[in-house]
Length: 168
Image 1 (cartoon, rainbow, N blue to C red):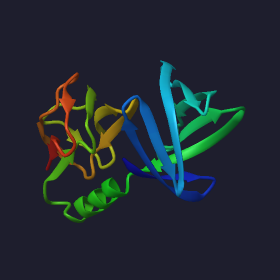
Image 2 (cartoon, rainbow, N blue to C red; image 1 turned 30 degrees about the horizontal axis):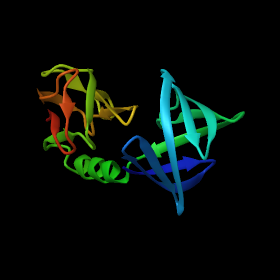
Image 3 (cartoon, rainbow, N blue to C red; image 1 turned 90 degrees about the vertical axis):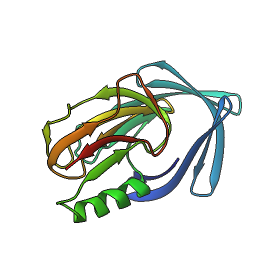
């Protein structure tokens, strides 16, 4: 999964993928291989080079979707964005009168369906929450309109690119 991480007003390319029981992360050109275990919601043990780090992650109240990450006595506010999703949202925003299709960006599990078919939603309103790689991602409506179709069900496994909802 390729993301952009913004920390202290600096943007960095981030690539995260699973390889068996390991997580491989590349930050710009630096590569890290580690084990990650969630010990309780929002608390992870990261094991790298025979060292163990406790990492706490919590959503902030910021509208930009920032998360606060505490590790090794330091605290960071990080804004993660998916460049592909941003391009899709921008292009969907141009067609305010057309259909907006929400698709799973990666394989995962539907944790919550936040709206029902027929509901009116505003642009940016949460529609579905999908968990992938032990992180929950809220899929938001790219436009204001009416939810005409919800194909996702709570607890269902979804594939990348699978249509989860349609908004007109």
